Image (cartoon, rainbow, N blue to C red; front, side, top):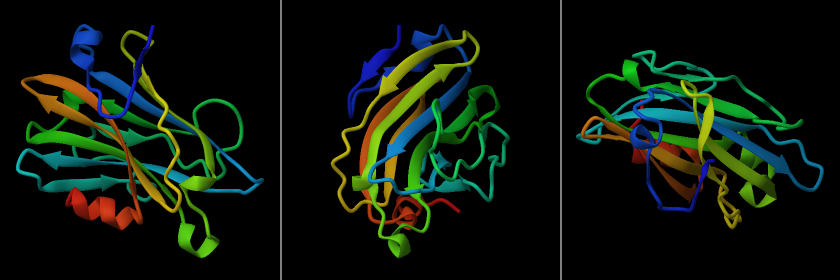
Amino acid sequence: MAINLVKGQTVNLSKETNGASKFELRASWDVSYGQSMDIDIMAGRVKADGDGLDLIYYNNMKSGDGAIELSGDNRTGDGDGWDETIYLDASMLSKDVKTIPAFVSIYDANSKGQNFGLVRNLKVQIYDVTNNVAVADFEPELEFGTAVALVLGEFVVSNGAMYFKPLAQPFDSVNAIVNQYKLR
């Protein structure tokens, strides 16, 4: 049974999965008020010294080391199931990578007058591909009003183990997230 995470809580994925290395971060959402909204999932690779390596997003779907890949771009969020997914193979991660932020951003939000205040039922699941089981679920409280980007959480590598920490940290732009993690 999956652990129900709360903001700031950390789960040791290595311990919970008996050392599995392949994970998915799955995200789903609904849009209120009949709007069509393109929410994009993204990730990055950050070294221990805080320097970002690369940004994985809809125009760069795979990390430089091949460890992180995106499922594709669901431009509406319509339908049941998971809207977008980050695939992570920790065994392929460059040894200098210590943090993998996972975040979402509303494409062209400002010109469309959209923000996360219009999003409902945002859900995140960490899934263990090796053992075919959900490890953790996280449902951020959507109290982000004018935010157009949101850090869902971070995968963290520490002492040979993989952890996930849900953050639900709102931002006014995806560029602010990219700058915070020094992603290229």
